[in-house]
Length: 414
Ligand code: FAD
Ligand code: PYC
Image 1 (cartoon, rainbow, N blue to C red):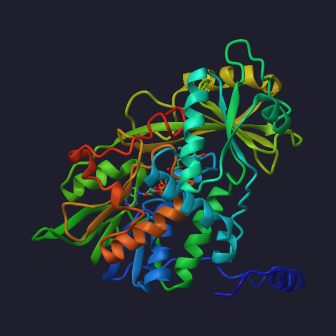
Image 2 (cartoon, rainbow, N blue to C red; image 1 turned 135 degrees about the vertical axis):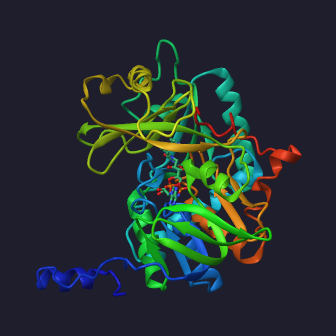
């Protein structure tokens, strides 16, 4: 595949952009692969990429029932941070954040990583104590964060109202190298790199069954026929319970809709990401100028990609108190994604009861930031049977009571 570069742009400009190649191929499925990954979201594609790059395993198919990146990967608010409390979480999220730093160069695809800084507001005494604790934990884990006072918050975010009547800003947990990236570019960049390595990214290919013999997976049934494999990776986020049922095991996962919305574009007014856990909202400004706003998860299990209306109202009402200037903005679009929630709000990167079948899920409301790190670790788990980044995230931890409890510590309100 031809490299993207400033010279390529100049060359194509001179010939009216007639020479660009397709970014990835659209092959027909083969009869058999060494590895099949179900789900061409960020995590599935990153897994395939690092299987090829780090372990030389390239006879790989990534099967996607819709279009690649059409699941949560293309529906999130793109916040990237690694300020988690527990050691296994900090390790995988910081690995991921650090891979994001030069992912554009690695993939030769501009994923628009913008390390603009992520701020989590402390709006109650309880949150102040919680974030101080996280800042100390992060210092021990080698994650660069610090607790900042309200005057520094105001300096970094001039549009904020730090004297809110209900929830004044008492400080914030600040991660200067957190930020955002263009979410679909992450999926597209990995897909292009996988295709370039000879892997098959197959869209509109829904897995409808998992075929087994003697406790091993031998292949999958799809709407495009049966495909055999030596190893299977299930990486389907909100549909994890459905796929696990096909494979004959149960997961401690609930699927709910999480939603987000964007305003009309306005002039630059906020150049960091702000998360306000207590009032249940978070906001950043996109390169186009839209205010990108995220809200709460539905309080009941469902498979809709919408989200319920009262959450929008609740989120916007709460954010207006902290950012009064957004009260005059028109909201343009709203959407939802199906997120896969575990009880301890930590992911599952795991072997399964089937010998050669692995599962990567449970990222819930926070897996965009984890895509490169998760792909790196899960590829190692699939290739070698063990990975220091993944081993503590086994699905069997729930049986053994070894939770990695981020339910409050994760800092998001869901
Ligand atoms: P997905 O991108 O959903 O990919 C799974 C794929 O599997 C889908 O494309 C689906 O079509 C496919 N699939 C399902 N069933 C089958 C089948 N039977 N056969 C074939 N393919 C199948 N995270 C953050 O870190 N920061 C944020 O700011 C953030 N904000 C969010 C905001 C919203 C509104 C939402 C919904 C999520 C947010 N997240 C955020 C979470 C993040 O988006 C997800 O954790 C992450 O994208 C999950 O990626 P994935 O690759 O596992 O799943
Ligand atoms: O995990 O940072 C996060 C997040 C923000 C919005 C949704 N999830």
